[in-house]
Structure formats: structure tokens, C-alpha cells
Amino acid sequence: MTSKVYVALRVKAPRERAFDAFVQEIGAWWRPSGLFQTTPRAPGVLAFEPGEGGRLTETLASGKVFEIGQITAWEPPSRLVFSWRQANFPLDLHTEVEVCFEAVGDGETRVSVEHRGFDQVPLGSAARHGFPDQALLMRLAEWWRTLLTSYRDTSA
Image 1 (cartoon, rainbow, N blue to C red):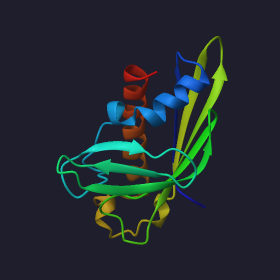
Image 2 (cartoon, rainbow, N blue to C red):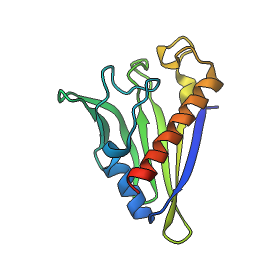
Image 3 (cartoon, rainbow, N blue to C red):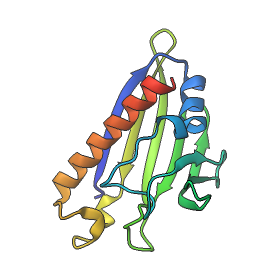
């Protein structure tokens, strides 16, 4: 069984706009986290390369680019799946993020994020910050709630 978090909220935008805002404007709404850093240095700007096989990258002020993950499913405007690697993960470890966009109500979209695979992070890994599974997942869920709120308030 895999450990995962699931967070969802509604945005006042049709699915097409919600999907586009998530992938095209991630650099505007993304908020870095000290616990879930994607680069070993100060945060940069995130961006998706569209399409299956595209990358999720973070570009630092110096111009250096870090690959966070790769898109494994690109199904606009309904679904996006990508691998996720934090700076302090063991070299061969990736988790997975699935984002779904479901039409609800008049011109609204339910955006849900499921981030799974943290059970693969070894207990002694720096990526856990000393947290047991439940506490680590609670912090991850809190961070995704912050991210989705920023996404909703900034982009959609």
C-alpha cells in the first residue's frame, strides 16, 4: 500500500481554464516549502513543458534548471500526472502527483491533487525531517492545501 495525500477545492473557471492555469501559470501561484524543497538552493520559478514526456522544472535566478519530474499523463482538460522528486530524496526515488479537473456546477471546476509514494522515502532520510509517516503526510497535505488556495486565488 502506498502512502498518499488527497486535497481538492473548487475554482470559478471552466475545466479548460482551470487546467491551463495550473500548467501554464504554475510559476505565478506556486509557493515554496522548506520541508518539501525541490532544489538544494533558494527557490526559483516552476514551469511545465507541455505534453506527455514534458518536464516539470525549477529555474533559479542564476539560470540553472532543476528537473523535478516528468509528465506521465497529459489529458487536457481533465487530468495531469507527473513524477515528483525533492532535492533531498535519494537519487533513485520519485513520488507521483495526479491532478484531476472535474466540471461541477455552472462554470466551476473541482481540482483535486493526489500525491502518492511517500512510503518509498526511507525512515532515516533527510526528506522526512524526522517525521513519522502520519505527521509527514499531514504536513504534505497542509502544503498542498496552501498551494491549491494560492492557485485558486492567483490564477483561476
